[in-house]
Image 1 (tube, rainbow, N blue to C red):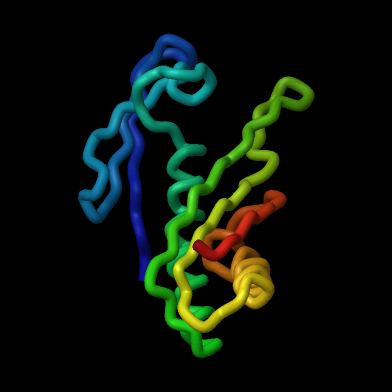
Image 2: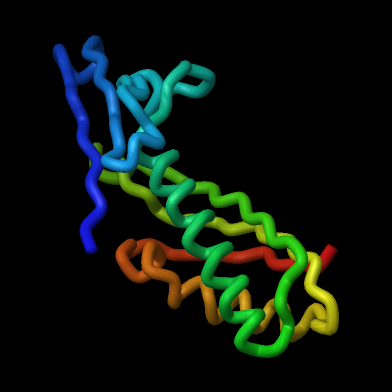
Length: 141
């Protein structure tokens, strides 16, 4: 199985503009720019935002699977992922990804929910692909 995405960039790093597209068509020529990446409030997406979205989606789906395997199928799970960028020695990096997940899960207590969320954060496909620190705040609704 393979998944594809593509990028087109025109111009210099700071003044240029580009587009991002996915093979599935979910994103088609979505604009991105230096400003969208490194300045707050600029329109457009950026690779780091897409990594956060990928982590949120992967983690939430995997947590649903892990809860179900443990005998607690969830009614609803929601996760917000924040990729924190830091600059060190003139280079930007994703330093951490913080997950805030909330769940409505009949029959599970907070301790078990937290335990399963902690285990899941290192086991989903996207988490395993990234070499960053993950933190999690998992609570039942």
